[in-house]
Each structure stands twice: as C-alpha cells, then as structure tokens.
Length: 359
Ligand code: SF4
Image (cartoon, rainbow, N blue to C red; front, side, top):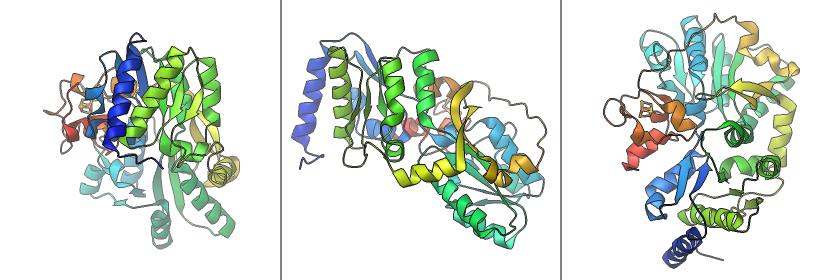
C-alpha cells in the first residue's frame, strides 16, 4: 500500500503537475468542500502549483450557503417562544439584524446541541423545540433517520426542524452552466461522495464536458486529483474518476441513500450567494411534513440585509478569494465575523484567516 504521506511521492506529484501544466493553457479547477480547502491552505498546495493552474474554493460549507433568510427565520422563531437548537457553527452566523447568539443574550432560548438526537431529548422536556437542520448529503441522512424514528414511535412531540438541507451536485451543475467563472473541472467532495457515490456526477460531467474527480483529504489526494483532471483535459476527455477509493464506493452508502429517499425529495431553493438552484434543496416528503416548522408556524416575510462590503456571495461562487475582500482580517475576523464565510470552520474566509494565506 502507498504511504499517502510519503514526501517523495508528494514531490513526484508536484513535478508531474508542473510537466502536465506545460501542455495546457490556463486551467481553473473548483472544489466544493471546506475540508479540501483546509488541506490546500494548511499544506500550501496553491503555492506549489504552476501559475496557469488555479484551484478555486466554491460553495463547500453548509453554514456559509445557508441563506440569511433562514437564519432570520430561526431568530424570529426564537423570539416567538420556540426553543431553538442548533449546531455550534450556526450560533454565531450574523442574520440581518443579529445572530442566534445575540438573540440568546436578549433572553431567547437558544441551545447548542451536538446532534438532532440531543434536540429531540430537549423536546421531551420542553415545549416547542426547533432544530436548525443544515448540511449536505453527509448530514441529511442523520436528520432523516431521526424523523423516521419519531414517526414510527407515533407519539405527539413538539419537535420540528427548520429544514436547511441542500444537495451538492446541482450547485456544481449551476456553476458549470451559469457561473461567471469558466471552470475546467471539479474536485468532487470526498465526504459527500461517501454517501452519494459517483452517480450524481455522471450527467453534469457529460453535459458540460467537465472532468470530475472525487478526492480525499490528504495533500497527495488533492495533488492526485489535479493530475487526473489535467490528464483528462490533455486527452480531451471528461469523465468521473474516483481518487478516494479507500472511502468512496461507486454506489455510495446505499443505506443512507435509502433513508434520504424515504424522508426527502429534491426541491428548488436559493443558496446564499446564488439564485434558486434547481433541485438544490432537500424538502420533506408529505408524510414527514408535520416535522417542518414552516408548515405549522407562519413566518412573516423577511427582507435580507447583506452586510455592506461583504463579498461572501462572490467567494461562494468562486469569483473572488477572501483576500479580495476589503474587510478580510481587519473589520471581519473570526471573533467579529461580518459574513457567514468567516464563521464556520469550513468557511473559506475563516480557513484563509486561520492559515493567513495570501493569494
Ligand atoms: Fe464576508 Fe468577512 Fe469574508 Fe469579507 S472576509 S467576504 S466580510 S466573511
């Protein structure tokens, strides 16, 4: 077995990228995973790439792509006597006027939980608990499993979700079709692909002639994915390849997919920084709608106020890097985040700040 941290192999991979880069013009490769951005920044991968090869972070952070309207809705519910339960990352994301953390400091019942199961436990003690359910295909099965369990128990419980789940391949398709950056290929998200398998990538790969390579999270994984994409471009091919075979199977996690198919169906929803993405969301199916807080509580229309100067939208679409933002590292820091991309550990601005990367 190859030692994925072998320095000689990494050196060889960088040399190979340099050789291949001489056979192509400017190449722009996007990834859609905060963990890939961590690897890229932590190990300085951008710094060793030839000038004509750019790896661009895309919308790979679930917290970052949750819209301000969804956050404002959670805050509205907190201010209207619901107990809001949320994962830690969502707690500090600024809404139009305040964050959930600030709502809590004003007396609202906002609690950080580690999982939806913790939120259900609170619902057994208290009235009217809402869990802010965020995340891609990696977390949706956990939400689904909990809702199946609650439905099967068939007991009345005042537990709801604010459903903010999203699925990744449709946003990749949007970026290929309607994005403002001419992308030459995708490094597909390793975690998401453990659930979905390779199937969701086949159609956009073929339709937009875009090489797609599923990659793991070690530096050699990212470098190998770049090599595989460059080889496809040089050979005028566009296919889906799996660099992360040690974790991702062609068919994905069939049990998790079954849970998702039982509970969710694709819906068109907006992502932060994007218009409505066709099939970009995971709506609850009819038989699970009783857990959807928006089915039981009417929330007044919310008008979003995006903070002045914040370019999270452009960063999420791969049009800008965090260092292009005039607020980066000065007005906007992890302690005092202005936009969602500076809050979550998976946010591009937060990751750039952590590793102080200049592009
Ligand atoms: Fe928004 Fe802050 Fe990122 Fe600028 S640095 S884009 S203000 S999150």
